[in-house]
Image 1 (cartoon, one colour):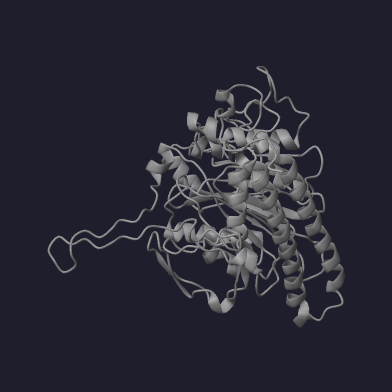
Image 2 (spheres, one colour):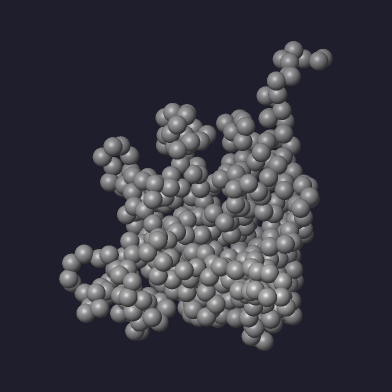
Length: 508
């Protein structure tokens, strides 16, 4: 699935939280309805089999409770996507990323090979399972980890043992650290700890642009990787670093650029990937030189930094803004009046029509114990929706967010936002002020509920805490449903006034 990710370190965020956030976008040609649910330990499988790749593995017998945003349809597996577990560790998986021919030739992806012929007959060849992928990652990892670093190590071990059939980026966070892991070929992987004072922008492209092999294969303070990465790189001539500084006898530099070694720089990247990183960084570092033919940074640049120190601290609203954007204020805005028809259609928007959900996973170190994990959620196209907070130390989720089915209905947050977006898109400028006011009102209400609920936590017995947090989530969901219903009424009326069979004379 196509997605966009932003990671915000604790010293770069407005409140000292770690924040990992990702748009989950459905593939071209379909929508993927989703739910927000809690998975209890008794519901977690002890033996797992992937629907898509048929790979199987046993799972530990001590899973924790965790939240997730799985698909609401059957047939292709769980696709848990994003959640926070009972230890307040968050995981978002995955950001589909790119590779190149040299990497895939050196370590091919592990793809399902169907059986050939009929079992018991001459020439029969049994099925060969594939590896693990986005369908599986959260289910196999999140219930068992007590830190972001543990998440990297557990997933890394699974990748080395089982392989993967796709290139992906995966984020982990706890109250202190954020780690970002990228798969490299079928069995290899790299990971980097996000510096505390930066944010990271990740479109669908291998992103890490600096790596320290000595640290990764030694202390592992800021970098981690598969154990044989250096030898594998040497054997397959994958290091593209110029110069002799830090060059080992095996021809691999101690410090190298993974994006150059393992990633891609295709023309498709320039219309699909680099442009998204450019706009997110333009928004959070507006004083840099972004415009004009001699700009320091252009949408097609291959060397946009993986991480930056922002000009000011990054808020939850900033996260929503950049993950909803469509190049506002530039000639590339599909809803704008600058540039030409060609420029307005040139780049893939971040806030695209095929969005399934946005999950911003916030671990708040200052919050009362038991209330630190918050999963901010938006369903549907981000240009037309809002994002609200859900506590994660809970045993159930509100029906408005968890009752999504294949049927289109306004009883579901997912489908109601889909309807609003489709109606509002055709007459964007007539509806945008109403949508902006809706977003501000609902997000402000979410912050208010968090503040009021946090203040109550200290006076609640431990066995009553989940009920208190569930009540807060219900309160947010009820307000959200009421405001979505109002927004639907307004958008429906405004857009219907542009119907070609309208007539300006009054009927009275």
